[in-house]
Amino acid sequence: MTLSTSEETVMQSGLAELHAEGRIAVLTIENGTKNLLSEPEFIQREALLSWLDARPQICALIITGKGRHFSHGADTSLFENPDIPAISEKLRKARELLNTIERLPLVTAAAVNGGCFGGGLEIALSCQFRIASPKAVLGLTEIMHGVVPGMGGMERLARLLGREKALPMILRGEMLTAQQALSAGLVTKITEQKDAFPETVQFVQNLISGISPAQIRAVTETLARDADGMKDPSQGKFEALLREREHHEA
Image (cartoon, rainbow, N blue to C red; front, top):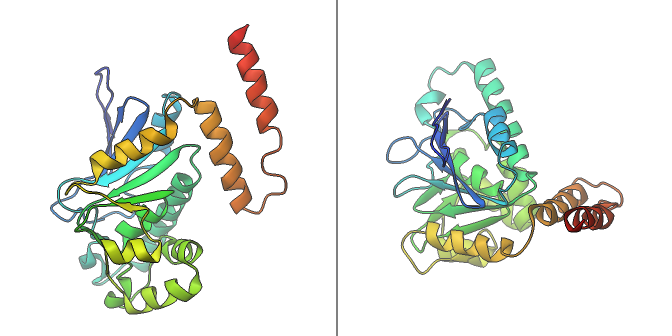
């Protein structure tokens, strides 16, 4: 991991770069033309949390891929003569990372260009929103390589689309065009531009504009707790924000 000392601090960790654009954090997957995940934990979980903790003004996180593609997923050469215990440990860390992203007290969105396959789609599914370019193609394609998604993508897809839609998509390794993904409910919107990133920034900015980080945390934490089955997940949130407002007005 390397950190710059510039005013706009950039962090490079694993296969990704992380930087801030105002109140939005941008996490970019970088590994060749297809942004292959040679390591399932594409950014160190602890490094991501530490970076965000140091920047309480951040209200949103956008994940994208460098260049033409979001990510084509795992480097399939890793499946040849595999060290299964080592791969299992790497997948465990990747699931912890995506569980963390899923529960961040932020607005999260994936800006999807080009191919978003396998582990790439599993990453995108950990975000609350997926904004796709017109030529994006998405799919959990692991079945074609004799395995199944290993980073939590199967269950996330089933929660998002319902089992009836998710099961055939996973078993056949279906690759959906942007329009098909929109119709299925896999993506939130399709951009008018070739590059999904600018419209994803605008989409996120429209959600967080005029709202404090504390309000965003209260909403996102409540919905995450509700998804986890916690009883009365919003308890105390209203009162906490009132106390914070009084503190700032004092």
